[in-house]
Length: 220
Image (cartoon, rainbow, N blue to C red; front, side, top):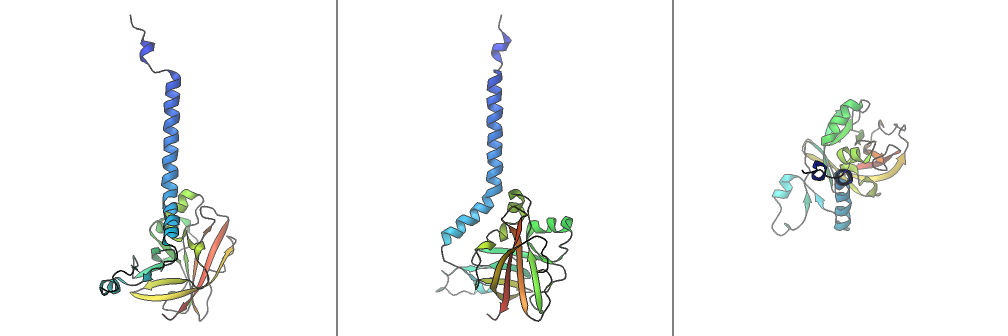
């Protein structure tokens, strides 16, 4: 007579299998979480000091054969979009987003960055405030904050391009700083000057601080 217990895996084998499976699942989660952010870091490192030009789809299509080797970064949305050539950020902008209602902006920011309600647009005087998600962990940072993840690489004098209703507006970085989460005076900054303020969480994946980038609109 066969001893059925001999046909069943030993308890230690099941534990090893379960432990290995849990480790594999954990590794997959880590890879899926950090891959978008790691990819941006690697891309930024590999590009060196090379910064592409920014232009519309029409400009790229009309590019001469002699200049066809030159990289042109085309915005994903020319009606309302932002391109930051130094870090190759390229995202649509969602207009008039209620920055005080997390249930609203969390859904919106899955597909782009947001213009805070009540702030200006590139064709009018005043400050346009653009923000990405302030994730509570690295998982949310990868989901919502990837476009502005490398914002800390920007320096004074760097270029930011905003497309609005088919027209390109050029901005030059004037200042970068980290501030406390409750410092919201940067959102509404009325005045005659045309500026853009970018905000993201800092360090990425935390709610500890906010990284602020302020840029002035300049003539191309």
